[in-house]
Each structure stands twice: as structure tokens, then as C-alpha cells.
Image 1: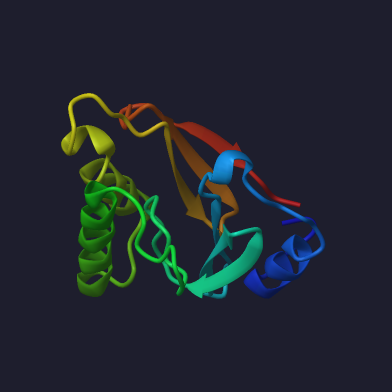
Image 2: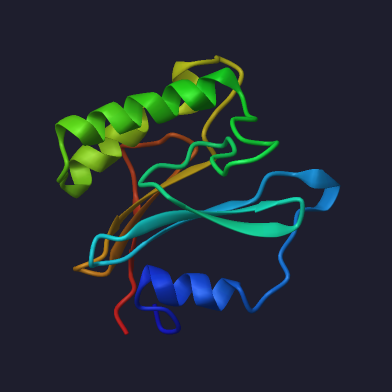
Length: 145
């Protein structure tokens, strides 16, 4: 936030760097701002792609040869979150936490877990960080300038 106050600023900042994945791994960033803009930034074949979306769940969203590549459960988790957003355009932090808990990987495969989940309040400049699907305990970060 000290270098990019808006999604547009963040995308411009990322364009200054040559980011790419080793071993052809998926890289994507979810970026949002207090004005309500939200995008995913993905790197496909070492090219930066910007997609207008409020949700990212570990599959390629950008048009092209890799679109949709990811696990079936990542698509299912995406669909669940998009449906929740359709029915609840504005959610408080607890509702977002509960939505993330609902789509955590352990709900889909007993041998997988979500490494981390974060809930942002961009107006209050606060982050709730949850580790390894422990939604009973969060680490709170205040990110005020």
C-alpha cells in the first residue's frame, strides 16, 4: 500500500518486474483496492495477464492455451465463491472468513489442506491471516501507512 494505493498502481508496479515461474509453475496474485476494483495477475508463458475477477482459486483464468488448467476442485471452489458473492455482494470479515473455510481444500480431499487464507479490510487497513485451515485463530496485521 505504500507503493500502490489502487489496483491500477499495483499492476503498473508489477509491470516493472520480470516475474516468471520456475518449472512452468502457476503464478497468480489477487489484487484489490478500497475503491472496489479487483483483478488477478497471472504469468502465462512468462507473459503478464490481468483478469478482472474477485476470486482466485489455483487455476488459470486468463484466455489462451492454459485457461482452466488446474484441479477440478479448484474450479468447484471458484464456483462456490462466485455464487456466494452473487448472493452477498458485500460481506463483513467474518463472512469472508466463513466463505474461505467453506472452500478450504480439506473439504474436497482428505490429503490436502489450504496453506493460508487471508481476509482484508481495505478501509480499516487490516489483514486477518489464517494458517493451515485453523479458522479459530487468526493473526491480525495492521497495515496503516
